[in-house]
Image (cartoon, rainbow, N blue to C red; front, side, top):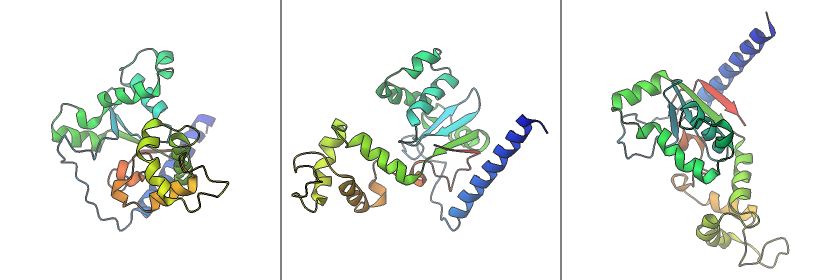
Length: 216
């Protein structure tokens, strides 16, 4: 067996192992997911389609999704210049991804379902705790991101236990990671922001069979 054949076999075996792990984790899952959803539904908003290569990718915020979207723009022919795409600001990348969304394609529900059942489907995951920490660092650490500092920080800071603690920021600044976690634990699962929303609420791995599961 050649080196390439051995690597291919090893990769296939690893994919089988990961798919089995998903099946075991989803055992007993009561599905409420339906493909026959109205076009306005947000349930499939995270699925990007590449009809040229018959592939579907479910992007997960804080799992390198910006670069995966850049790659998808090249694969779909949306952008031709690879170097230019990789230098594109992430805000522009996220605006472009709507043109690749499966749910926005001008096809009937029957065609949409066929693509979900026949295209190669890719999901890239990350350790949930690393993902949570990444979301905190990106949105709240240092100066943070304006939208999150303005809309989330005032609520999160209500979980501050001791404002005199020298390790905590002053009452009018930032949030600590422990405050961020306490805030998330207080929320109903249906109201999570996409950057810390569980995989099941973004990509439905218990309902959609992913052919390839990558790890970041």
